[in-house]
Image (cartoon, rainbow, N blue to C red; front, side):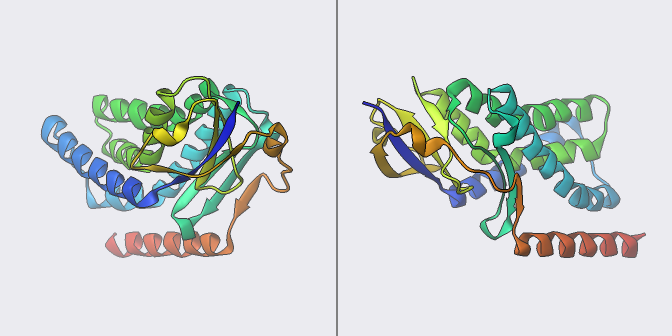
Length: 225
């Protein structure tokens, strides 16, 4: 009998991993490829980082679409109070579909752009790619975890830091530092048909924080010129 396992993302370990990835990648890039950043490039990347993370989520959406999720069921959101931007595929998704979505930002604006930045000596592109690697820390851990499972499907709960895996296997035996099973229940297909009111959702605090952040970074750039 299939069961639905509700998972909660452990964001603190993921954020620690993100910091480690950033430090390692910055050191590796500097020592091996001798990439250096000007103060202007660092400041500009701090502004472009917001657009880069938006692109990160759009690529998750493209991955969901390529993995079989209908476009009307893909939802984007910003919840900076939880420290995340998110993309939800609000229908049941195959294992191939969720893995496609998880790897898209890491591959396209992480690995690919990093290689291009190194080859053509574009420091700001390298820096943005490294920033994307840090933002993909939870994606990487989810990809590794789900890739090891057999005969599962994926769905959402509607909360950006939770998701559901549906399986006949007892997934409570599959432990992860980054993911925690918080509920196990009988599988009911109707639970994973969602009514979507807004395809884009941004909390007021997130909108205010983004505006303030951009203004501060622009002022700092103008002052340094």
